[in-house]
Length: 254
Ligand SMILES: [Zn+2]
Image (cartoon, rainbow, N blue to C red):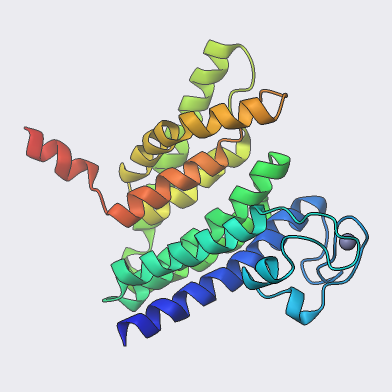
């Protein structure tokens, strides 16, 4: 039975991952996420239903457009597999509590969309932050009770303020804009979900994990701008999935 759920969560994640990729790619350009339907970016060939199956279509088409034979980026397929794996991990870790599982899946979905748009355009869309924070707030209220509705909001505000202070410090040190407004707003949502000071720990983990990734990005793109959103995303996903509690850790050290 367990394997059945794992397969279902993987397929569910891979399909959503494919959709999130479209959302993250189109929203910053102001395009509709439904029309036009998915097409080859080279020849405009509209993808038929059998060409839209996550992972399998890529293997079946051998990574090429069926019409113009232009190579399809493996980025999409890796992305679908990763989203599927993250959904499976969420299921395995949070299966005892449906609301915790829902919060984890919503949070990861938001971070994946942000990952795509920040990676491609250096933009974290306000609409994505707004819609996800409303859904997450409702889920957190269901989890903690209506009388504690303000707890995630306070955690979000504290994380936002600290991130803003880090930005001001960065601007002062580097004598230029060190961080975009989107990164600071994103910390509000991360703070809401992970709590305070857990959210700050995710900045640290993200920066640590991000060093090699940032190095690759600097080699590939020549503009020397590293999107911080994806790193924050990776950091907070690690903090959430490992359920590492920074306060418990420090208390155990004393
Ligand atoms: Zn084509």
